[in-house]
Image (cartoon, rainbow, N blue to C red):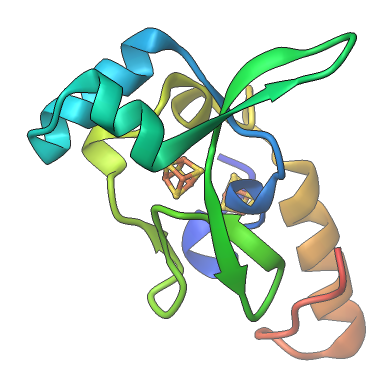
Length: 120
Ligand code: SF4
Ligand code: SF4
């Protein structure tokens, strides 16, 4: 594997539109023991433009990336619903490489600072 999420502050979870399916919502509902309708209202919102019609995970403020998925623990820098996370989170970054991690590694080597987080 060409990337290590444990060394990354969770950039992928800060994407502004993390779309979920009805199946993802049912899985989250089961995890929190609430109805799918309740989970949909509490955890997601409807995003619609001419090109896009999606149900998106809500965010909360973050000190590193401005905002991040509401399920992200901002101190521990990890997902709090890992077992019940949506499909898109399971698949990301779709292969053995993560473009952001490459960028992070390069910048950290350049700054000679293992903790450095560049502006994304
Ligand atoms: S951006 Fe890449 S390295 Fe960072 S948490 Fe996401 S998949 Fe892992
Ligand atoms: S559900 Fe978990 S893995 Fe998916 S974006 Fe939110 S914090 Fe990240």
